[in-house]
Amino acid sequence: MTTAQHLNQQFGIAGQLTFRDDASGLVVAEFNNAHATASLCLQGAHLMSWQPRSQSKPVVWLSRDAKLAAGKSIRGGAPVCWPWFGAHATEAGFPGHGFARTVPWQVLESGIEPNGATRLTLRLVSSDKTRAQWDHACNVDLTVIVGDTLRMEMATENTGTADFVIGEALHTYLQIGDIGAVRVTGLEGCQYWDKVGGSELKNQVGSVSFTGEVDRVYINTSAECVIEDDKLKRRIHIKKSGSLSTVVWTPWTEKAGKMGDMGQPDGWREMVCVESVNAIDNVVKVAAGTRHTLIVEYRAISF
Ligand code: TA6
Image (cartoon, rainbow, N blue to C red):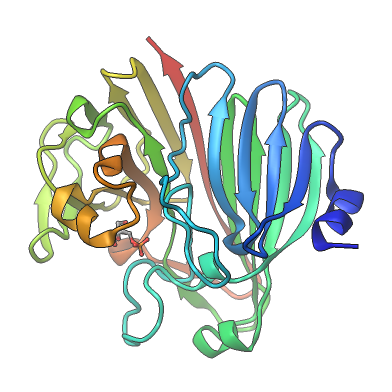
């Protein structure tokens, strides 16, 4: 019996949640309920797509160049960045955004919410490889609830006797009509580290609009953000808790071209990242014996 067959026996939900063995050798969970469809790769607990039935276009973007491969990150979806965000503070050879998104996760449980949404919880599988980069006794779980809204809960439990500090993110790519026809509200007046051309601390004036590369880490903000999309005529609401940083990112033409997997030639124009994060000034100390949870909920409303 294959991995997917075992998982279907133990955690599958007829007509709502099925697991399949992908040609890449990875396993993918497919969600299909009255409210939405979604897909999630078990490696990295990587949600790859989400489309509410109320929307004619997906809300979570996946590059048409995205590839599933063991040990490799997937371009798009909602990458799990953990236990650090961005480059490792001291080890240049460690993977950017941590190792969580490129290692196996195991299914802990699945179920149906009272409103009919489908729930799946996964736990990162520690190994010699992960312990070589992060040797703290802990569990990190991701719960995904797929319905007319998409809820994601990333919980870090310190099961050891010493405190530790993490950086983390749900690095979500949202689908838009065109990067030139959207703005992000909710960050007005916030301070941010501008990563384009160095790292300077600046203040956000008005909403965020896009005429070039944007790579900003907004700090000390728990604000709800809204992507106002004039082309798709919808608003994507991004409501979070347990997160004090928000990252807004578009690579723009030159960087997207160098990345090579953003859906050539201009797939990058149809996404913007609005990420729920704890990074830089907002890294999180998880005291021994405690649990920290980052939660984000997405909702798309047409106008
Ligand atoms: O969150 C924005 C960012 O840190 C950018 O600087 C860019 O590196 C992006 O993440 C994508 O990173 P990745 O490692 O997924 O290619």
